[in-house]
Image 1 (cartoon, rainbow, N blue to C red):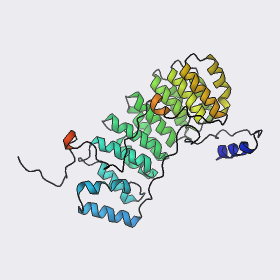
Image 2 (spheres, rainbow, N blue to C red):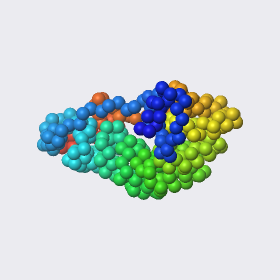
Image 3 (cartoon, one colour):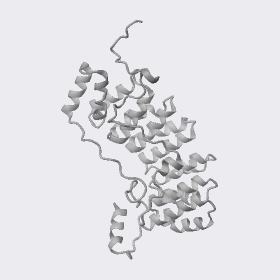
Image 4 (tube, rainbow, N blue to C red):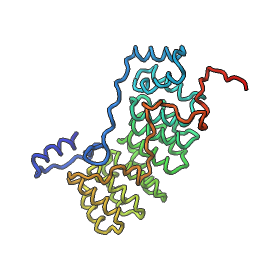
Length: 322
């Protein structure tokens, strides 16, 4: 809000002189810059509606497939019964990992933060795709109570890309914690450039301004082009105006044309100019996966018996012999 007030005043008074506080920063998602805000989700059902839906599902009313289509609706509710129902459903042996990924993405996009108790069960799942979806969902939920399970998952994760996503989720869930800032700094000192890149993204989420600026300043001179580009991305999309001079100096010394372009775009955003240079940056440069969550397309059913999925059958229906 502080950032928004300052920007609003500058629109009418360009000479407005203001010293920002250590915590001031631009919103994570800006229509002016890099990512459009998420689409509004449907209205959550009432407690009575949730009770009726779950009652029908447990009684087996309707087909197995039709009943499953009600899951996205249930996942909008913060009722304890709804959360428990989703938790039990996801742990069912009838659910494929492909569907768990879709459900986790759905939780991240539309569920209240209380659903962290569902997501944390999959941070250490045996399948990498499920762990990735869990980390991304947790970052979207931004629930402080999830920090402990995220740190635990990070300590065991062997895939540096997934460790990076877990670090970003931790920065989103616990941006004020000193231990989070310490982990971001430590990760940026890693020899693997992928982890350094994710640490740079995470540095834009924490509230320790000194650590943020320290990491970003170093990242502008990192040996890896992608890390330097990511530093420009964070500075520009977060409007960290204190680093404009560092951006200019780095841009003048930059030999990579693409990186130089990102640095120029970052400077423009810091100066409140419009730029679409960072549209899709997290997918194209950092390597984030695009969501496969499509609640209106026979969700959450993925590959079925015809193409190898094998678990579209009604679990209460026995197959005929022969």
